Length: 78
Image (tube, rainbow, N blue to C red; front, top):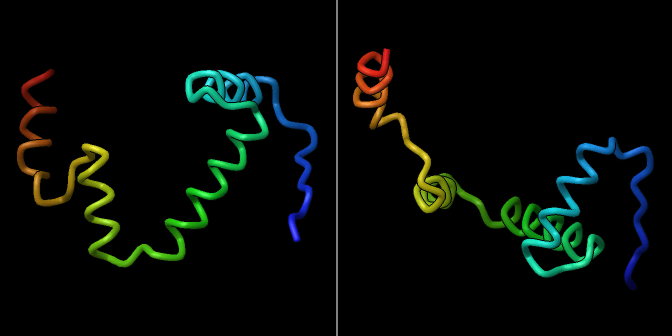
């Protein structure tokens, strides 16, 4: 059976960020919050080390293997 959840005293900045995100995703605030919760729960259930690496790469994040080039880029930017 579904459960109603409530979050009280949300800071204005966070609430505005969530409203903006909901608008971008064509959802209500309630729908956006549920989508965020569903995503987090799904990732926690199925994420193994290889799944985590795949998720990191799909997000375009860099992995430790690229650390040499990351350090070099940082030094060159100065």
